[in-house]
Length: 166
Image 1 (cartoon, rainbow, N blue to C red):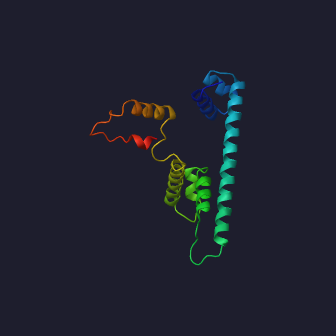
Image 2 (image 1 turned 135 degrees about the vertical axis):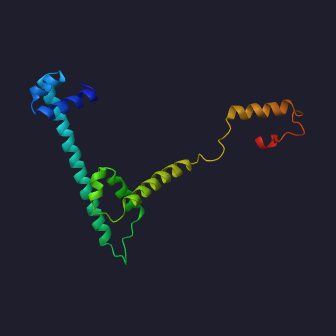
């Protein structure tokens, strides 16, 4: 398997010369290898282009759905609309985003994306893991045993409350 750098050299040699054999001579490989690398590269480009087209169609359809809702003055997007648009727009290259007609500005979409990420991490931190973690059972047993064995161990300035452990 060729490295990414070698593949890019083969692709640029093929673009310069236009033939498999000529690119093979320039890049120091066989014409069959050049043909395989070019075929994979073109397949990736066509697949990527299909993804962009599909995402763009879905965005436009969703915007039509939002506009067809009964609304007084302007489109009112809910959280699900915002999440869908932000996710689909991440599939489209930056140059493609600028030629699209969107209901909102690109800055608004970036703000939505930041909000989605913030909400995800906020929700994750609230799942019963906030606050002080529970004391391990063996440590609790050890502390209680030491407290029973040495009842005068606490000094006047100590803030430890042994009965709270029981």
